[in-house]
Amino acid sequence: MAIRNVRFVPHHRPASAAALLAVAALVLAGCTVPTAEGVDGKTGENFQVREPSGPALVLDSTDPAELALTASQAFFHASPVVVLASADDADARSTAAATGAAVTAPVLLTDGGVSDINIAAELTRLGASSVVVIGDEEAVAEAGAATGEAAVVGFDPGALSAAAEAAASAGRGGGGDKKENEVKVEMPTADRLDAADVDGLRAEIPDVADPRLLQEVLVAVDPKLGQEAAIGTALAAGAVPVEVPGGSVAASAETVETIRTLKPLGVVGIGDGFGSADALGWQVGVATSGATLPDGSLRLFPGRYVSTSYAVPAGVADPAADAARAVDAASINGELLGGTPLVTVMASLRSTEAGEDGDYVAEQPLERITPAVEAIREAGQLVLLDVAPGNQPLVEQLDDLEPLLSQPGIGLSVHPEFRVAGNGADPGAVPVAELQAVVDRLAAIATKQGLPQVMLEVHQSTAASVVDRAKLQVPPQVAVIFTAAGPSAGQATAGGVWADVAADIPAHTFLGWSAPSEVPADPTSIMPTEPLLGLVSAG
Image (cartoon, rainbow, N blue to C red):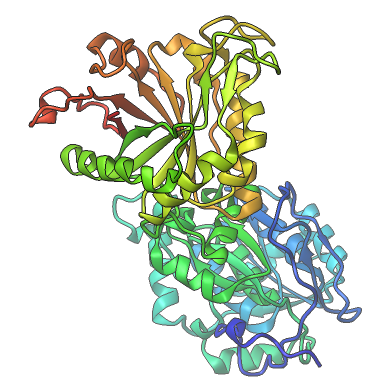
């Protein structure tokens, strides 16, 4: 008999469902899981939980009945008992979810976006011999064709617990002015039902003795109305619930610490707030790895950053010691301009000659810039590696820089307006696909290495320097900042440049602004205030 990891013993299981054993582990890394498919369990013919296929899975249907069905498909291969309720009845949904958790059975819903034929087909797939219908005799009769050939057992408990009643009242309009999908509901755990009612029900249905459940699989939830059945099914299969406010792991330090303590081997998100499976897997992977930005956070925003440039000069005996001046300058600028200090390190420079590789870029040797980067990070500041564009796609320079970009707190800064014509780009501009390749590469590095969010600064003196900029797609692993940069170094960005660059930026991106070299005592007199600045470049 396998021993379940003590940190993962769930408190939602009833005392009679002891001996929680392993099926197999999921591994957090890599691919997106688009459906609720899984692999068969190995725990017996009549009851088998199912491992959701892939490292991370998101069940994101907004229809309660469809969400419940996909949860059943994701978590169960076979079950002699299924709990059934009406999707239109908030009380019944809440009771059904708690019942599923109590008797270790998946929960399905009728009267929603799933037909009775599909419900009956799912009962057949599961091999269910008994269906527990939540409600009175009328509810049992209305279940009708959905129960197929299974025996029907009515379950109408005398009372819900106070927590269950509060959730049900929210579904009846107790949420005030909140929209239905914004109403917070309680976790549908087994202890919300009266123990005597549950014991009476168990006497009428097939007994699943010592069920072997999922081991160390986490279910991330931000419980909303309509999700009760799916969550109840996850709990019944043995998944350990963790509440993730707003669907963002990084939004709550408490959530991050919980996940870091649990160290899950797999994660399933229930609800449309979690985004893609890849994004959820990355968030949990970062929380588990312990890697953070210098301030201990996982995400760069909300916040403001203030950068200063540092060119690693050739021939300096101690680049790390030399980098100290940039650290001091960034700290001063940060205090003056009201932001977190950040240092830009020149990783490559523009060249008027093609050079041996013909790309019009003079790359700084990695061994020269690494000591400076490490010194800046040790000082607790963020780093941006500034790369000059030549006549090759921007993403090609990331090959040499990946060893540095694979560390937390190191991002990238690019200048599309200096692009040399070639490889599908006109002079002074890049197609959005070229910038998208950089974003996607940074996201892939962050996911692979378990890094917190990576910053990408895009300098622009005109929005047209990224052709079709509005089409840029930004995953949560990357924070993209479009910095309005004046045409001359050391000067404040002109109002016209700011207006052009700041207009119609892509979704999920931020704005930056270049300050003059000599910042006035009251910088607010020259800094734009609308929209809010995410970065001030003060070199």
